[in-house]
Image (cartoon, rainbow, N blue to C red; front, top):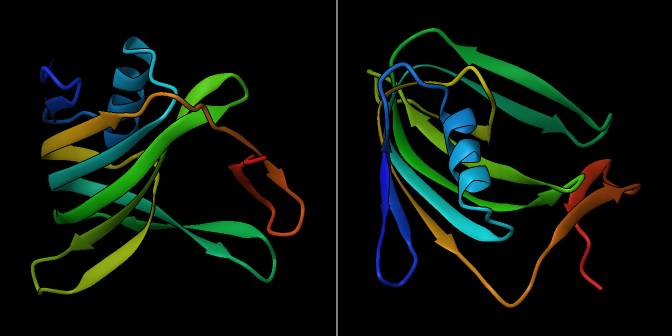
Amino acid sequence: MYKKTKEGIIIGRIGYGEDLLTALLQVAKKENITLAKVEAIGALQRATIFYYHQDIKKYESVRFHEPMEIISLLGNISIKDGEPMVHAHVSLGNSKGELFGGHLASESIVFACEFMIFPLSGVSLERRLDDKTGLFLWDIK
């Protein structure tokens, strides 16, 4: 569920039990967003994040099988392989006040979540493989 402000900002809520990353991507595709800033707060029933090992250029998944607060989610939407891609980092807190963070991954299941997407115009950015880092980064020429 979401609405657009007169400035074109998308504000919404992701439903209980939905996958957070998938839901954000669905909005991006439906609204044909090619470049935007993304923010969210809320809580997850369980979460999966990725940590990137720079030395071996591989992601490691970290799973939390417990309720977690979304302290902050900050990211962007751009184009990869001709399709919108949501790239978001998330800070998560547990019931002990411990904080964990990383790259948001699928299998992060929403308890409650409010989000904002700030579409940008005038430029489009595509992600391409950067050989030095092993990451798909913005191809800015």
